[in-house]
Length: 270
Image (tube, rainbow, N blue to C red; front, side):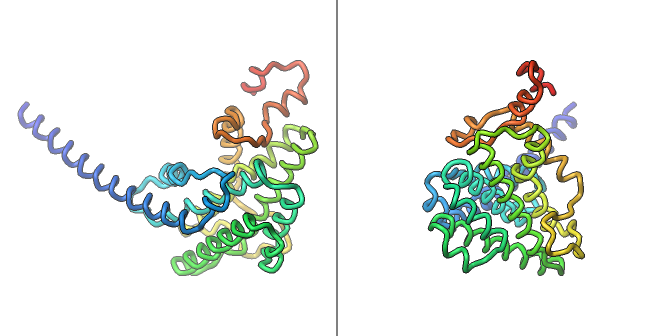
């Protein structure tokens, strides 16, 4: 019995040492992320947007749990943060003409056209451009290929989907549930974030022979299924969870409009 107690004590000591090591790694990463966020200037420039670097970092920890993946966690927070910021631009603050112009700039990735943007959008595009180019360079150095073109197309797809969502809400038009969900899978940000993740991990999931004129980036269907789960899970909550003033729709609401007579509970169960 004494031997068993000694073994348990040794195991607990090892576990505590491991916890302290991992805690130290996470503290270092959190410091790096906060430093990057402050230097980006987005928090100061966009007072209307969410300023939650710790929350964004928790997404990164949840996705990449291995302590050895420190560099990847820090890099992944950057596109995650921009998804939230751009979402707030479309949902909370941007005017329709600004949003159309912003989407066009992202689609063309045109620095000259970006000069026409209001200052807060210009700042956002600059940070987005920097992190996208940095990603391309990091992946090229590590794995020998550069996915920058695909990443730019993913950001264009995201902004276009945000614009569609904005126009539905501005017109008071509820789309069909399937149309809402197809668009909502993109606005969840999951396809974009997971694409960055797979590239960081050396998985070249995009088709290098893809026609550059096509808007669709061919990705594994698993990515879109994960995005569908997250979108529906998010829609079972509400925007108030984020203390936002914006509204970006709900699959439940679209389903109820299409299925007259259905109860709210049956829509949630569906």
